[in-house]
Amino acid sequence: MKLSDLKALFDRADHCAEEFYNAPYRAAIARARREQDDLFMLLVFSEMMGVPNPVSYYTLELQPILLERFHDWHQRMGMEHSPLDHIKCC
Amino acid sequence: MSHLTDKRILLVGGKGGVGKTTVSSALALLAARRGKKVLLVSTDPAHSLADAFGCRIGDNITRLIDNIDGLELDPDREVDQHLERVSAQLKRFTRPEMYGAIEKQMRLTRQSPGAQEAAMLERIANTLTLGLKEYDLTIFDTAPTGHTLHLLSLPEAIAAWTQGLRNANQRSEKLAEVLEHLTPKAGRDIDNPLSDPKEHATAGMDARTKAIAETLLTRQRLLQRTRELFQDSEQTALLFVLTPEKLPILETIRAVKALRQEKLPLTGLVVNRILPEDAGCDFLAQRRRQEKIHLQQIDQEFADLPRYPIPLQATDIQGIEGLNSMADLLKNAGL
Image 1 (spheres, rainbow over the protein chains, first blue to last red):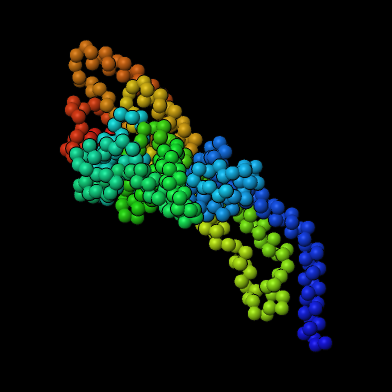
Image 2: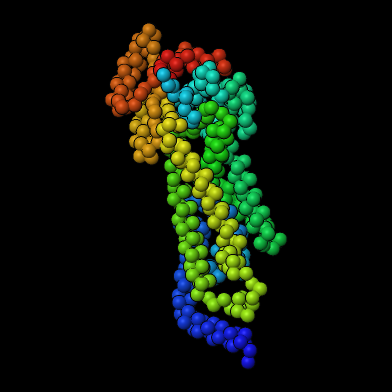
């Protein structure tokens, strides 16, 4: 067995250990991030839920950027179908 | 001696019909006489600047007389352009059969409350930048009080809101970085000596997040700059126009309070259309008695603000000539 093979083996073991120990934290952080993103979406799209948004005119230009996340978001928010007239994602 | 016209930005406000446009036009003439290059901007959707000067102005910078350019801001044009940009973006993401729905939504947004104001604010902010760059003095002939007050407090409201959005977005980015750190570098640098470790810093941040951050940041900067300029008493002066009548006084009391709350540099009141002493006849004498009471009230209420009295003129103030005599009156009043 060559030295480099041994090194690769250790690397792989290290990788697995890291994966194992980090997994619970990763899930928590990922959830926190998603919640943060959901809050952001809520702020941008608040108007359609009846929350007045003082800058709805300015957030309008964010809507195209957020479009891809939109479907997952409105489902998480408990809306089965897209509540926006101009975005029919499902 | 320093004049009010030495400032860089002058905002003229007041109730509808008290003579804001005449006062701001005459101020422009006065400043031009003192050798300033002036940009006179009307932000009232019902423009009357063109009527005062007796020429067409519109939403393009128009030379009125030597050293004075005029501009009548049209928020509709701004709204249209903004919505066009957004709908073009949206169309890239949806199927062609949805285009109709997008158009309809944009038409509705056009009428939504706040759209016009937001667009006007953006125009004002951009005009301000231009005014500071190319002119000595920019005079804003603003819309009637309620509107103006709202417009002046809008930068703060919007800046606070965008700051909130940015914070949410930034926290998300931070968490993404942590997540990146916790994720084993699977398949990237294990057994892969070719990958460059420096790339990781930006690899996690997608173009979308960057676009959001940039959009928010640009607008926030613009609005904060506008707000700071408006509050800077070195560069900006706010002049309120009122007439010695009940309603304008009451409205001005409210406005002065609101402006102080917003920490805007209110520098004085122009008390317009005071009846001259020598005007005879019983009817006018009676009017003058009534007016005395109002003037006293003005002196009482606004004791701590400089007041500039302007007498009522026998004829309408119109054209350059009329405005020039008005400029004389303003100068005599101490402006």
